[in-house]
Length: 68
Image 1 (tube, rainbow, N blue to C red):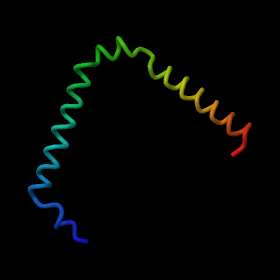
Image 2: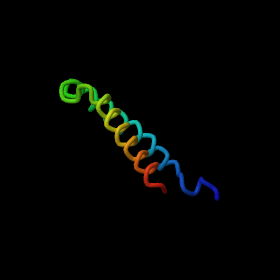
Image 3: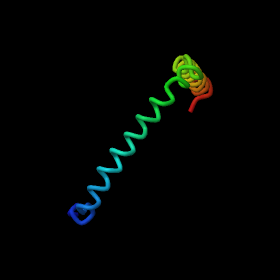
Image 4: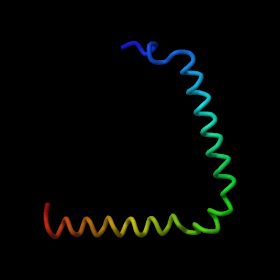
């Protein structure tokens, strides 16, 4: 089907504006909260990797021991 029927000029302009505005707000908000991230979420990536790996290992062990 022809996409021109779905994407009029007005919709394309709205999509471009929305994506730019939304991206800008996300970047601005992240930079604003960067100090809080460093303070409250210190080493969070390591913890997520360790606990996630542990959960996956337990799941694989259960599947291996008890079959399908």
